Image (cartoon, rainbow, N blue to C red; front, side):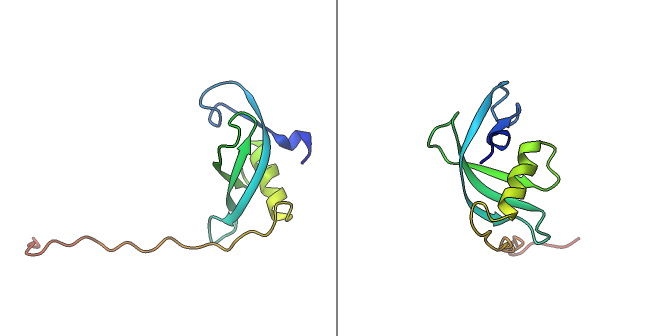
Length: 101
């Protein structure tokens, strides 16, 4: 993993703190949409030790590290990307005896 790709910066990622963390691992990549433009995965960082954090990488991410991680995932650097699995359809709740106006 190249150093420039290993730094995660930004206030949203580190709970409003202006800090940097080194990416220490990426695992379990899986497509997050049918269009294959975003990938969900799990990461660990120097900031949070062994705690596994969810991460979503996008080819159009506003952050350079998100785009770099996406490119590495697509290139197979962290193994194959699992297929997209659509969320199950939720049934609409019904109420017995309800009246339609």
